[in-house]
Length: 301
Ligand code: KPL
Image 1: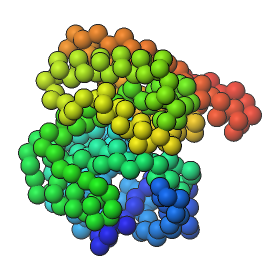
Image 2: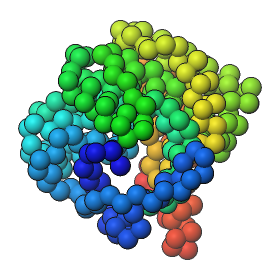
Image 3: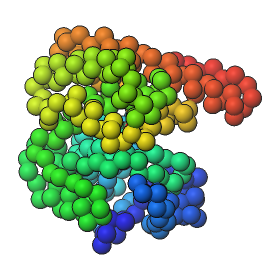
Image 4: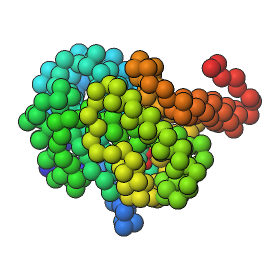
């Protein structure tokens, strides 16, 4: 992986670590080819001496835990890259690390079929930039490493604009696919859902203007492009809901809602989507617990 670079994967779940040690990573590519990749695996949190680049790819609701558990554990020279969905990750990582921080956003589609079994469901591009908005050598080096590994990457100086644009798009795909259980390809064909998605994006665009964020292109066009290039994918939020896991709704529609409140921009559609997915999280957690334990389990929300 990451051709000519030494890569170590760190995961906090011992079950996943064990599975990956035993079976490696099975990667099914777009043409159906299955490749088995052997990669060094460590159970985290762990010290990572000599690490040049630390890619944080956890769910947005776990960023705070990463910042807290790795504080003081990584070398000051290590570049930290947030490769995550949602808003607020960079700010959270800054609270934990004095290191150089880059942010990256990807439109690659991936479907997880279990620990270490990933299907590449859509080719996209990964945009990388310095979180302070400066152009940096580190972004170019990380971009080159991605390119060499066969993942198309580009650097951007306005990475916050990139993150906001992608968050507005995710906020108009992920909750809608979770609520309807439709694949990305089915969403694009559904007129009614497209209307709701456009209303959610229009609100996000108004909030970003009030926040003085310069978006990168029109989110509505990106929405269309992403859905058709990741047609076979289930959004990451739908994958989380199906596993009874927490979703990134708070860092997507929830973040648009709260920035909207701060800037006095009304965001009723994002508000409704947030509340519905919070309810869905609750019911899918309960359903999963019932299946696992045979007893109804109360959730405390
Ligand atoms: O980012 C994604 C996600 O599912 O979170 C896309 C690109 C929409 C792929 O499904």
